[in-house]
Amino acid sequence: MGEMAQKIIKIDKDEIVKELNAAFAEEWLAYYQYWVGAQVATGPMRTSVTEEFEEHANEELKHAKWLSERIIQLGGTPVLDPENWKTVANCKYDAPLDPYVVTLLQQNLIAERCAVARYQKICDITFGKDYETYRISAKILKEELEHEQEIGDFIDDIDITVKHLK
Picture 1 (tube, one colour):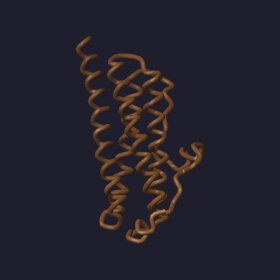
Picture 2 (cartoon, one colour):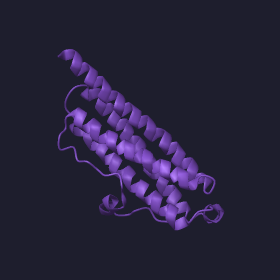
Picture 3 (cartoon, one colour):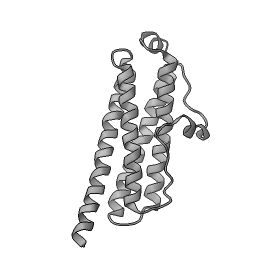
């Protein structure tokens, strides 16, 4: 527990820990969604898409680590039971029931847009009140925006390719 981390923030500690725990759970769900999607993906550009999914999965895992460290600094406990991840998360996990790459990309695009909204919210509530949480959230927000762009680019590239094949 970080005594000074808790002392210097100008925001309700329980409120920010609750937000961080929701984000933490969402990162684990995103990690698994990307990882399992990379395992089962089929269709055009599969190799490139699965490489991107694996890269994103590793970044989501890194985000979960940063969040857990901050939660602990603030005197909280990260969500300990994976069964509770879906309960506290707003961004949901979509099982890859249809392993076609475009379907997986669309599922991940929705998840990334939800993540962008999550980190924008955390940045908004911590700006000027909790500099370290703001810094971490802004850093994750930057990466989530990059993920959203990359996923959108893949969808656009596949759409263009399909149109030219007709």
